[in-house]
Length: 233
Image (tube, rainbow, N blue to C red; front, side, top):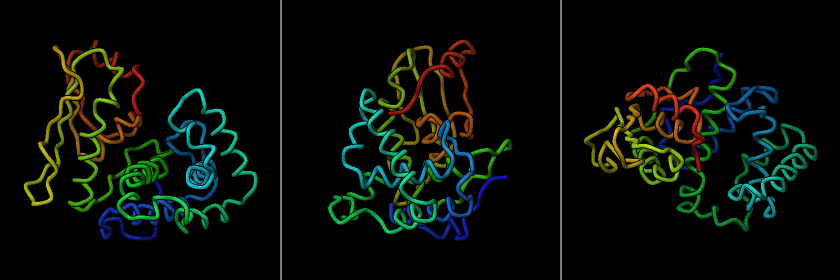
């Protein structure tokens, strides 16, 4: 069964501060042993990662540079060993430490909104053999997620060796609309097209292919290649 937080998702506007609270709720509801979409991680590992990411400076480079990932991994294991699951959850709920730039709301939204949203879905959809119902998102949050899809499209799909087009199916004509409903992630013909709501396209681009609820169309051979191609930042 999928995990649902105590609070109502649709009641939130989608700032990083909101997503932090919701992520903490869904992790707490799941408990420490619940599987996630992050291979090899349960929810205890995930909250240790979240706390390490914000509070252990030496671990930060390994989040971006593959050769340094070992340092990050050791720091995450140390964080998990040093604190109980409830303690880590309390630390994460409390927000970033005073020295972190993400204490400023604009920077928090820029660096944490997508991170917390994706990890929330990692928990909700982790270990669920059935398709998990999508969150009911506010128009504002849908547009913020779509803006992230567009901004990161070329980087997320940089290893794809053919044309790739992303098309959202939940576009809106509201004043908060964020750009066109179609983006070319990779130029070239023939091309594969991915279609789905902005949130699902975001999850797919972050490597959560098995759980992302999207439609893939194009040449079967190219689709097979796409399924084997590493995605993500």
